[in-house]
Amino acid sequence: MGDEMKYNFKKTIFGNIPINWEIIDFKDVLIDRTEKSNDTNINMYSVTNKGIIPRADKFNKKLADSASKFKLIYKNDLVFGMSREILNWGIMKEDVGGVSSAYKVFKIDNSINPMYVELFIKHWIIYFMDIIKPASREGQSIDKSMLFKKSMYVIPKSHQDKILYVLNKINEKIENNKKINKNLHNRFDKVLNK
Image: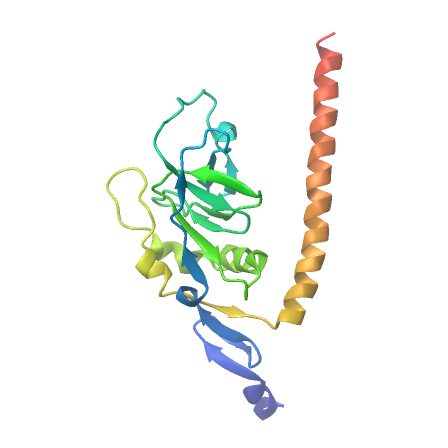
């Protein structure tokens, strides 16, 4: 049994993984996105350690509109915000949006499912902490050269599809429950305010 196991797994920086799992480099699957706009009809987003959220949800006050250009982000882009001790990053879920031009934005190559990338980074977040540039002031952009030195293991596409299908169904239920809870909360508030 020991010899058989030795041939079914390979050693990697992530530990032993099945031999049919690939190791790929981020530099081979991330494409730098630099497209900018100043279209005031595009929703603005912030990137936190909890993901990409509408900018209005992060800031309680109304932020001044800016005529300066912002970076465009598209559905399934990998976006890194300003970080210091906590890595602020996420995968864009909406079709299009805008973020600070200081953010790093990457299109993920079509060969990799963006949800798989998201799960991998979440699971191995400590591995990615050294992409945060050392800084004495609040927040710095990530070090792209360090990110491009990173690699990840990729399970076979058929396995990815099965896992991601189940996770998508779970996420749909979670989002639906959030909407139900928000609706109930609003109704409760209306009853109390009568």
